[in-house]
Length: 257
Image 1: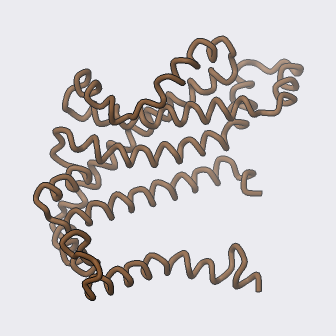
Image 2 (image 1 turned 30 degrees about the vertical axis):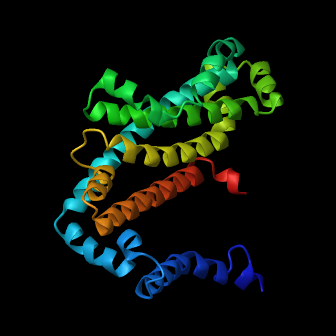
């Protein structure tokens, strides 16, 4: 029975792949029976009919590549800064005491609320969009990294000091590996935030990108085109999430044991 209904059983795998198709089928039936207002929610068949020419013309791939580049750049910048500062705040109480209140005070500010300030400082070009995403990712990675370091068993830190580990060895063999599970938790949260922010960032003076495509379709009341953009944002999220899972399994294989 466990082979069928267990955590990795056949039924679970079938549901994993079949549930999206089942939802689309129910949606299509409801649209055809006019149980939903197709002017607002359209139907999967109509969205597919709109999707084909957009994809065939190369327009969709262009928007996806532009958005993916902004997401990756902002994510890398925010993640790198968050990991470095999180390690420092976790390892050194004076740095934590100096920066902790500032982080606690600025973290709750909605990142969309500081977009006008980012636009004033960095202008309407690509930089402001990348910075918006980087700021959103930064806090989540920083807080998770610091928490990961603080949760490392003190015995490992004491052993490293007792054996005279250099600062470099201490960072690379104790602090960083010990915090990696929490760092990856922060990276996954950060990626979700990056996808939220890209749509808002591309609302401001963008000329390409999936977010721009969604807002443009909304302005034109082109519901099918808007859904094409939304579906592609979700696909981007799915791909990035799986890439992070793969990277996590490679870097910290012991976590799943």
